Amino acid sequence: MDEELAKKIEQTTKEVSFLRGIVITKSVDIELLIGALITNYFVLSDKQSKFSNMVLSDPYFSLGLKINILKKILNEIGLTSYDGFKKDLEKIQRLRNRLAHSGMFGFDGDLIYDKGEKPMEIKNAREMFDEFIPLWSKVMEELEKMFWHIIGKPSPFKKSEEGENSVKKMG
Image (cartoon, rainbow, N blue to C red):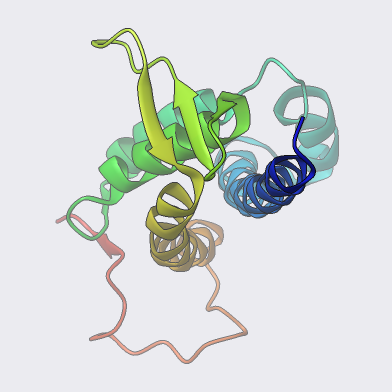
């Protein structure tokens, strides 16, 4: 193999691996916060740690399952969020899975993955990353508001102003 081509492949592999790592790490942030929401909704305080360790940390308790349970909790308690919040959660999960499980295709950071309706799709890792990051920021902010609402305490990190808080109890 040509030395220049080998260097390009190595550099592209490093760049894609770096982007994957950030997306997976930030997805874990979301997953942990959703887990905390679920735990605080269902479990008495003396059992929270056991519930989290035995149930939420189980490898078969996926991000998708946590998202589905969160949606049910929000519907159950009548908590609303910004329009598109649930779709944003699903998009985060989809982007995370595509970045984590797709194969490298070519030498420019393209990834190939099974999309479902098409046999295979190709998309650039940087494009997926750039789509993921603003969604992550928006969803994390909303999940933090939900967390403090569910535990019934004001956030110690931000001033709560009625106009800024998009998490509301349906009436």
